[in-house]
Amino acid sequence: MAYAALYSGGKDSTLALWMAQERGIEVDRLITILPDRNDSYMFHKPNLGLVTMLAEAMDIPLVQKISSGIKEEELADLEDALNSVDVEGVITGAVASKYQRDRIEDIAADKDLKVISPLWGMEPVDIMEMLLEEGFECIIVGVAALGLDEGWLGRKVDRQCLGELTELNRRYGINLAGEGGEYESLVLNAPNFKWGFEVEDASVNWDGHRGTYDVNSLRKRY
Image: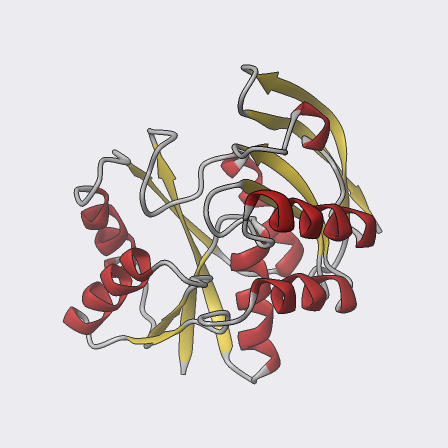
């Protein structure tokens, strides 16, 4: 059975894709939705222009669809993207958002597609531990939470990072995996990548409360 994976280039979608492949699931398409808005309820926004390079590193064809990003209306864009591929199921990186999971499953049910969400219900600490133990290389590319300041932008997700996130969880209640929108990530290398990447050029945008790390270019690293 061939599956399509909803893909943003962030840690959750990349980890879910890899977990599915480890289970022997054939993933022959990636689907990336490109929202016009920063406040999409369904889709990741930062650095989506890089997914083409990440898809190439995994040798999986990529389907991209521009979306309005407007709540509920953006679901039609996902439906259109799924209509363009011949698959029997879809893989998602959903962890705890019932809003996202329910809507994806509703669309899939209408098309008689199976849905696999390998991360669903996992504890945030277990997700982060798996990323580190399996050799995923990620950086933080967006922050929007108390305790996450400009210095976190562009930072590598490593043991020290996880330790500091754990302390911020204790003090402020932030989700270790960023599931509450506290931070966004970008994967630079993973077990299913044929090569990794390093940031060649990037800029920091910070408004005093939240910000993004905008990667302008990546360099292949073999």
